[in-house]
Length: 282
Picture (cartoon, rainbow, N blue to C red):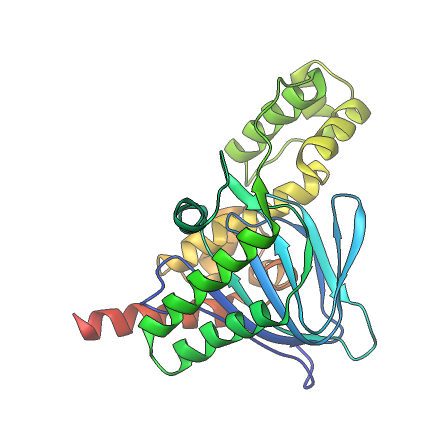
């Protein structure tokens, strides 16, 4: 990461299962990836641009970028000076509980827009991170729930229900299951297609339509997700790299940083700090 770029991704014991990111990126490019959580990113300086559902969205100062779980997207600078933001990654359970109390949304709650112009929501998001800096869990949890409630009321909606799968989508889901089972030894595209009784290009189209990215990109994303879980459990980055199918730690470092935003070593240190703090408080 260049000297003009900085990023910290961490958790606070008072906000279990919520990742927090504060960063300034200039040359940083996030490859197409997904999150298991929601993404609520408050832009304070510059412009972030990102591919989302086939379009390029732009979020500048006072705007919030909103990404629903398992939604493929990218991220890069929209202006030469890059962008600075504060980000919350609340789990689906948290968003659902806030929606149940504060928003008249039927079904599974989510966000209906990718970018919302809302300076006060940006302020709330930055205050969440500031409160964790001050070890004020009560304020952090309060500000986070206020931010989620505000954004759901103004920009929330019901996430689409599952529809009957097309033949291409069924092949894509079966391909995903095979890739998950063979994360460290995935078959070539032609072999995978033959196993599913389809052609390589038909599988490629169906997989991209269903998951928002081709199989090889999905595989890299899945490996990084698995590596995060191993790092959360205390596995060293070099061991995690081999366990998920990367050739070595530099290979993991490159992909992890392009998806998560920080190197795996820094990610693991922050997780260890939280665990050590929790043990010390017990």
